[in-house]
Structure formats: C-alpha cells, structure tokens
Amino acid sequence: MACNMATIDSIREDFALLDEWEDKYRYVIELGQDLAPYPESVRDDAHKVPGCVSQVWLHTLHGDGADPVLTFEGDSDAHIVRGLVAILLALYSGRRASAILDIDAEATLRALGLDEHLTPQRSNGLRSMVKRVRRDAQAALGDHAA
Image 1 (spheres, rainbow, N blue to C red):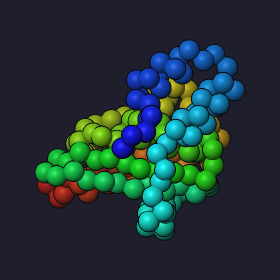
Image 2: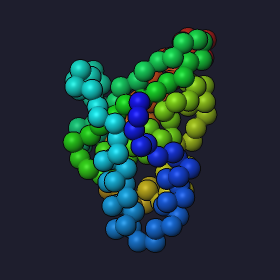
Image 3: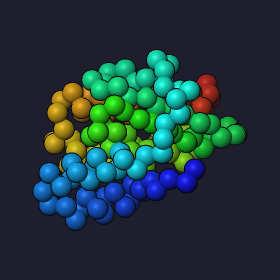
C-alpha cells in the first residue's frame, strides 16, 4: 500500500498551523485526494455506511489473531466527506481491534474543531462512520470482547 496517507499526528499539527476555516476545509479536501483508490469490488451496498447524506463506503481488512490489526479503506462521492474519511482512516487504520475500541474519536474531532464546523448532516455521517469502524473492531474481537 504505497499511498501518502497522513498520520493523525501530522493532521493535528497541520490543523494547528491553519488559522482560517476555509484553509482547513481545503486541507481536508486535499487529505481526501490523497486516499488510495478504493477497490470497485467493494463499492456496494454491503460496504456503504448508512446515515451519511453523501455516499460513503468503508471496507475492513482483518489481520490474524484474537486481537487482529485492522486496516480500513474508504471513499465518498463528496470532496469534504472523502477528506473526513481520510482523517478517520488516519485515526483507526493499522491498529489492533482492542486499540480501536479505546480511541475517543469524538475527542479527536473536537480537538480539530470539526465538531463545530461541520453541518449537522456531515456530523451525523461522521458519527455513522465511527460506529461502523467500532462495530467492525468489536466483531473482529469476537464474542469474548462483549
């Protein structure tokens, strides 16, 4: 996977350098443009995230073991939402399922200021994406994590 995906730490640092929300939105769009191409084979209803006004797809790849490393692929048909997908992938992808369940995504998004600068529909869609990632992490851990 040779893509230039930003880390959540680099995204935090870049956000801190930008004063204007117009610049931050532009940056979010750029993050979306850097996403690896989403496989057409999983651009289907099974991978579509419900609750998003824009179309959003998330695909989860599982590593081995009782607490597997999960890697996520995602895409959206909307530029800003595609950038939000990139932020979530930076936050979650490449981590163990148990670590994903420990991440407070809302706190991270609040720290970036996204909670107060997104439309209610986009905020709801973002919450739906977080729920989907957490559900997949829970499923990867199996029943013993319930």
